[in-house]
Every structure is written in structure tokens, then in C-alpha cells.
Amino acid sequence: MFDLIVLGGGTAGYVAALYGARKKLNVALVEKDRVGGVCLNRGCIPSKALLSSAEVLEKIKRADEFGIKVEGNIAPSLSQIMERKDRVVGILRRSLESLIKANKVSLFIGEGTVLSKNRVRVGEEILEAKNLLVATGSSPANIPGFEIDGEHVLSTDQILDLREIPEHLIVIGAGAAGCEMATFFGVLGSKVTIIELLPRVLPQEDPDVSRLIEREMRKRGIQLRTGVKVEGMEIFEGGVKVFLSEREELIGTKIFLSVGRVYNTLGFGLQDIGVSLGKKGEISVDPLMRTSVPGVFAAGDVIGGLLLAHVASEEGKTAVDTILGQGKPIDYRKIPWGIFTFPEVGRFGFTEPEAREKFGDVRVGRFSFRSLGKALAISEISGEVKIISKMEDGEILGAHIVGPFAADLVQEISLAVQAGAKEEELKEAIFVHPTLSEAVMEAIHDLRGLSLHKLPGELT
Image (cartoon, rainbow, N blue to C red; front, side, top):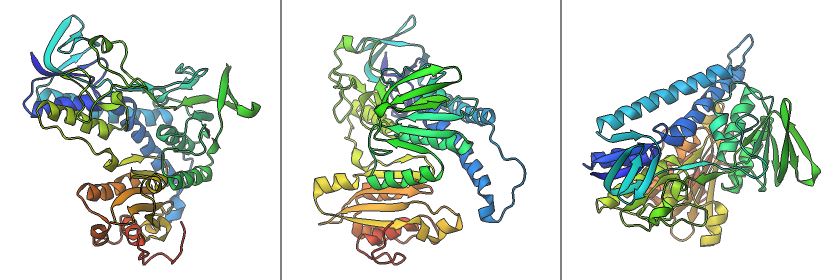
């Protein structure tokens, strides 16, 4: 008899298993494929490994900006880039397997079927436990007429394993994954066209973020078709044809379909034990990760919300703490995240329209990287820091960064806010010079019009 069975070895699942083991629980972890789930094997890590190769290539192409002469043919080898990506993933997966073993988590590889709230079948074996945590994650979504075949229409699972650079990549969906892969293949030399139904790329982000990223994509030659609907497609020898609204046609080599995720809740007995699902098929949970069935918990992508690995980790730990009587709700508004386009995006909290709708008048501070010494020194001047605060008490409502290392920089604002800091405390912080973080300092000061390295009335 285990204290906890964790169904799913992705980020939420393996973190919960390790955390539970550290908390002296006897834990079984069930995974049908490979531990690490989407993030490690087919998402966060492999995509960032690929983007790192693209970053090196872009730096080499810009070497003359730094007074360095590079001669000869500079060309990417996608097969070698993919081999490096596979090595990175392999190292991390083996490390994770060692952690699972070292923490005495019992790992079962195979399809798990829920028989009751206390029993799970894996192959011929029946596991029993006092508690069950469902962390089965999500899968790529598709749209009618664009069925993913792995050859002409690719999901996030297949695009990370291409061995040839497509001549013309058509990306359907301008969310984080779509924009990241558009960036990667654009740097490698593909012609890239992004099609987005909504009026702007990264439609969930602050409008200024979308504006800046659209500007940078166009500078890199990426074609943007926003506010356009795809009507269908046709496969022909050597390529694909996409039919757009207004009777337009677009011919490409491959399609990357990046239109969201669907929740993995069907086919393994979950409904048979009475676990309630939400309107979109996600598992319904309360703030402590409890489902409608006592003793059954859920965490990660499968519960919807923010489909981010670090959120899944926290949800997995919250479920374990709840089992131990120590659970506390997560404040999702203070969680930061990043999008790894060129330049990067870092964000937490409300967008400016959201903040104004909820709180009325707000203060907005901005500072452009082109006005920053360190950014000029490293020749990374695109983007800005934007911070939003509440008018009456200086509470920081959101931060949005486009620029070098934006996903790292936003963490310092988020951490301060999580610790209770408001505008008054932040403006007293002293920042190292010369660093990129000084752009954060200047944006904080600009909330009151006191950014000394910004011209009065200057717009980004």
C-alpha cells in the first residue's frame, strides 16, 4: 500500500513524486512513455536547446557589429542541431531518472488505468494507495481540415525532430510555441509565414508586447497574417496549400499547427470513478488541487489554467501539501513566465488593458533598452521594460519586458512583489551598473516621471 500514486511522469507528476518522497511519503509514479513529460521531451527543454543554436548563428551573422571579421560560408546543419538537442534532453532525462531512484520513488512504466480512487492498474500489476494524484498533462490540439500527420502538418511533437530546414514554413497560431518556432526557423533561413485568427501575435500578452514582437519579426523577414482565418488545406507533391479567408491561397513546404492544447482526461477510467470535468474537458479542482472525489487530486496541464511547467511544479507540490494537511492556495497572478522569441518576452500580472478595466486609473512606467548602456554594449537594444502600478497605493499590478534576457529580468520584479514590495520599496533598490537590470530600475522610477536617463515625454 502506497501513500500516493502519481499518474503521469511529466513536470507536475515527477515534482509531486519527489516532493512527496522528501516529505516521507511512500510514492508510486506511473508513466506510460518517458519521465519528464512534454516539457523535458517535447517542449520547454528541446525548444530552448534549438533556440540556443539559432542565437549562436544570429550572433555569428552579426559579428561585424562587434568588430569581428568572419569569413567563409556560415550555414546551419539542422541534423547536428537536432543531435545536440537530443543530447541535452538525454542528459536531463537520465538525471531525472537518477533522482527518482535516489529518492526511492517506485517507478512503473506503462499505461495506467484508474480502477477506483485507491487502485491503479499498470499492465498486469494492481497498485493501491491512500491517495491518487492525476497529472496526465495535455496534447497538441488540431482544427478540422488540418489533421496532424507528422509529414505535412506538424504539431509541437514533430517539429522538434525535423532534419531538413523547410523552404517555407507556414505557422498556424501566433501563441508562444508558434512564435518561438517561427523565430527558430526564420534564423535558419526558412521563409516563414504566421497566420493568426486574432488581430495580433501573442494575443494573450500586453498589446505593447505584441507590437514590439511584431516589429522585430518583420525586421527578420517573417510574414505576419493576423486577423485571418484558415479555411482548409491541400497536400500536393512537395508541399501544402493553405486556403485563407477572402479566397486567398498560400503555398508552403510544411505547416506547423500551434493552436493550443487538449487535456488528457479520457480513456483511463477517470470518469468511471466520478471525477468531474470542466467545460473544456479539464479536471475541475479547488484551490488545493482536490477533485470532486475525496482522496483524488489533480495538477498540471490537465486542470487547465496556466499551462506552464513551473506552474505545474507548484500545483504538484500543493497537492502533496494538501495530503499532509499543509496546503495553501497558489496566487497565480504573481507567477511570471517567458516567451523565448528574439528578443525574449518576460511577463507577470495584469496587462495594461486588464489593469485599467479592473482598477481604473493606473500608473505606467517604461524604459527602452536602446537608452541603456549595457544593452548598447552587447548590441541588444530592441524592446522595453513596462511596469504597471495601482494609482492609490503603488501596488505593482504587472510587468512586461521585451528584450535581452527578459524572462530572467522579470523574475526580480515578480520575486519582490511576492515578498510584498510595492512601488515605494522598489524605487529604493540600488542596481548594479552597468547591467540590463537597470532598465527595470528606470521603468520603476518612470512610474513617477523620475527616470533620469529618459527624455521627458519620451515614448518607446
